Figure 1: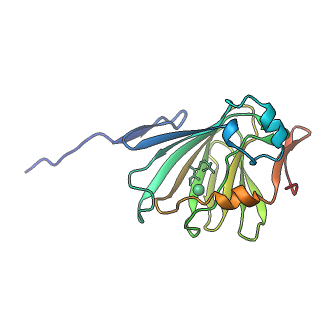
Figure 2: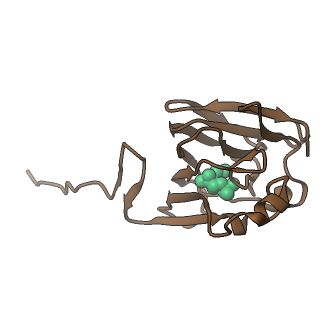
Figure 3: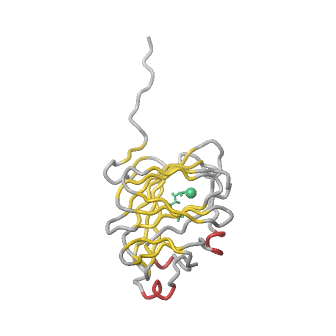
Length: 190
Ligand code: S6P
Ligand code: ZN
């Protein structure tokens, strides 16, 4: 009888904050200075400390982006805050291969997943620890932190999904999530 190889895992997830460690983990940060024309109130954004961290992402990329058949796994943390009346949120994107879907799930804090189809219909789902969100193909997705603590969510998506940011950079979402009387309201304000 031969003993075949048993090793530890190549990666770990901290189950408190879902930060990733191990091989092939990349990290990126988005500061308020980088989120040009993402929020409705550009003057309010320019008035803020430009070094303010809005969100950061870790991702485990075990294969090159664009390779079919693989999966990517990531954690996003969005700080609590607002630009004018609009909650801190991700840029949002369609996938470059638009027929690729994605899972998101809530880990910590209170959030809102804002979704838009290719006809520009917009709707939203509440995110909280344990919420699970299947994002179908051809659906743009963006997340806002509507609470007072960091919003943490996990994501898993195909390695050949890619990102199409230009559609959102040019045309935005067809709705905005604003704080009205202390509550998040999805409005048709562009
Ligand atoms: C990738 C996945 C997430 C986002 C991250 C930041 O498909 O949806 O990892 O990249 O939440 O959002 P964004 O819109 O700036 O990429
Ligand atoms: Zn995505």
